[in-house]
Length: 466
Image (cartoon, rainbow, N blue to C red; front, side):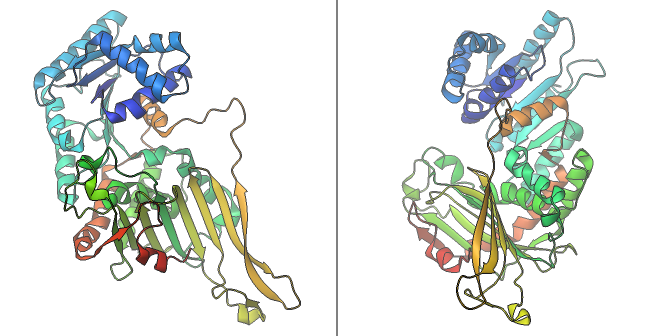
């Protein structure tokens, strides 16, 4: 395995801890070797110490000193500039030496844990250095993992895909949206396909709207320079929330068939289009412009709300709302399905609320929860209805059952050659087509201010019906 950007934030918080968790669970191949490549001032020994400290700090295995020491012994370090072919040649030399040591040709996993601005350059350098094919053995493979975002707009995304196409065969490319590897997100398919209660009502005839909310309490204390050039809309809207929506809307499919799953996800994304007439909100929390790395006059949004529609016959007429924000009062990742109201008068019924509709809240994080709003008879002399909430809290996993982190699944799937949880080039293209009209329209909207710790801009609070 080769981690480019081996001492960065992603490597420290996700890659090294996830790889160690797989090692501790005996889920990795018996023989493995990691080359850390970056511009930081390490050698093999100091980098191994860095790896050990990272594991102690970011995992629950801090007391496993011998296990950590053995794990870190599989790492070496190559220092250099990613613009220079020399670092790629030195990485290849490390791999050659390892192959010679074990007496066989090793499979290779390259992970670009680097800023997206370096992707284009590194695709070229990987091709020029012939890094994707080191061994002549036909069964040996080399896989390339690339983090989102894939471009800044549809044109840059297409340029990246073209460079990928000429540099690396598509079947070797693993485009990461780690949301697709989250257990709670994947549970959407289980709930939909395996439960007739939901399965038979999952269509436009029954569903009025679906709202996806990703609220974060964290501000941008240490990510200002990255975030200010991206904003909430592209940081989570164009990828994470769209992929969640695709899982909520996709046709039933054999989930063990990678090509089928990716195809139906792509068809959903290709069917979506923005409802520019609906309420759109863009906001920025107070104090954001004082964050290190943020321009003093920044117009970058830290909160957004947009609406979409679909031309799929199954979903025509249903409204889809995507909403996300930073520095909010509550951290929650959820999808809320609002079912169409029933005409109570045709049954001689009355209700204590104006709209008599059921809703299903799929709370996916930080805790998993199902909340169903149903109408029941209100206590009293009259036959009047009132809404009540019924909650089902997900059980904790039984003792001995391990629930892997999303990045553990990302690494393991790449090792096993399973692309199901990875985004196809077709999905990337479709997602950008959905968001390009929104991106062009967004600068015309007022940038509303909101207080950190609140629910967001006042306009959102007024419009929110949940």
